[in-house]
Image (tube, rainbow, N blue to C red; front, top):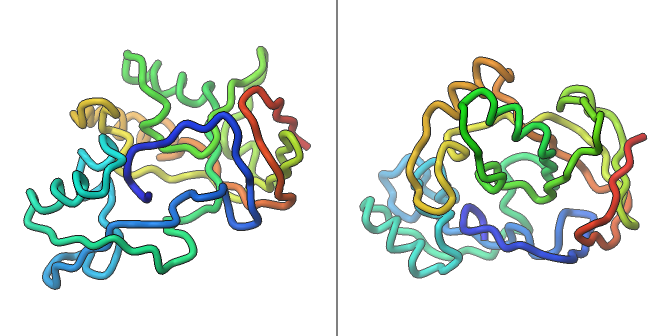
Length: 197
């Protein structure tokens, strides 16, 4: 469900259009006067959406803000931009150093969270155009991910830490993570080694 609580998976099928089940439903704004009318209600609109995986609770959060939403499974996928998002722990550590505190990686809402090998030092722009391989899956890195306000929200409380976005905008050109297209579908599992070519 787009913008709702992440679901950790030990194994996942990667299909030509993304991870199986990823963002196949969304809460769509029905309030005619709302700026997002007819579009998904997102973390930008509510800091609490990612706190729940329950549709009714999420709809209540929207109602608290005087926004009517309905569940929509009509679109094949509800992506903002890229098909698969990849986040390295190295890049999270960059932001942690800038803000002076530990940050939960789920703030960035990645599909795949990867632990960098010792000595690995590439940042997001260095990977654009490369191919990532893990398990039987091959991904083409197509773009860096420009960030919005959502990563400022704590994933357990919804409390905002505006310094996160400020640091990312000023020190990292507003980039954390990369988007990938699927070149070779297959299965991924926790512990698979990612290689770059």
